[in-house]
Image (cartoon, one colour):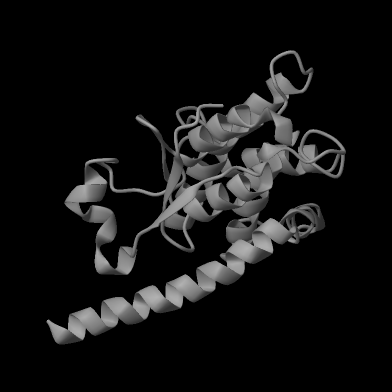
Length: 217
């Protein structure tokens, strides 16, 4: 691993929370650059110079910039193989690992966003087919074992567990036992509980700070 510092550019209660959990699970040394999105800090010139889209999570590793939550998860998992959470090349689970990480980005999240917006694209033209098909595929996989790829937790479970936590909370997927049990199993881990608690604290502080700044202007 490079000795360059890992910095997670971060706002609480966003997709960046998953990256923070993963860093903790991997035992990675890192710094947090905490941004107040309520105060517009994601659109500041300093942050836009790092990620022109003004989105978190964004990871910097020396001169390397990695954006998009799945790319960050894959990058970090490969960077810290000693944590035992990543099926590396040569592991028979590697193909399924990459497949399910890509299904999240290419199928699950677009399907959920379309569902929330009330948009039902043509199943023939949609890159993911149908929302129901994606959800059924996931349910079938999670019904096979304790975790996505078997009996051992991987980076993919950190990512999917967090995704289901939020989508269940906002009723974007059905609260089927196969989803709720899996989500509880993953997010009950100490890493998740620590980040959830700290995010609640930071979110309260950020909202208060942004409100005070607005009142003073």
